[in-house]
Image 1 (cartoon, rainbow, N blue to C red):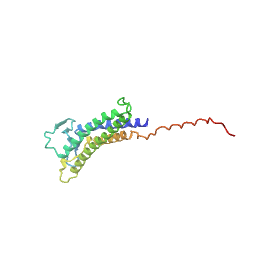
Image 2: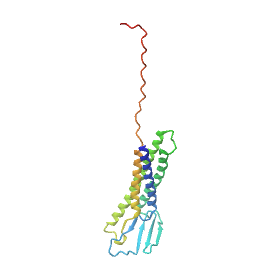
Image 3: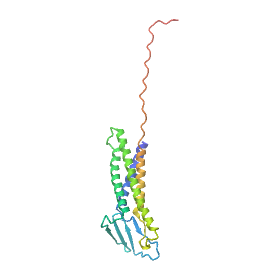
Length: 211
């Protein structure tokens, strides 16, 4: 059926997006040092992520250091961390719920209404997860752009968007799209009317026929 194919497509897109959210959260390349100035030394590249900062030498060697103190981190970074972790947890919950509601699964196949509701609930949770990741990545990107165009920011300390930020935007879009497909794949309940019963045929008259 068409709804079953749309449901499967939505789950695959949302699950792939959720995996990309996990990868983006773990990557250190959320912002990379900018080479916009004329006197910038390009012998090393500095990356900063949600959990660590890394320095890559021109030889290809990378050294990373995990942030020492949580309280010293900027509030925007802590909020981005919380939103991305919440997005991952919500996506994990949505995956289990949506799998139960899939038409190809044997779980709850005796109750189609509850199975449909589980798929719808999984799609809604996927939507919330995707929007959480989208808000986190957009907020972080806004902070990077704001610091870059700030005239008081030294040229040698400016950063640009990193690869993890682009992966996060794409991942959030996939999760939202997959969740929307899951919500749209549930057929609407049609109003069912009781079957019409045929009226009983009238018995032939037992009287005499008059001419």
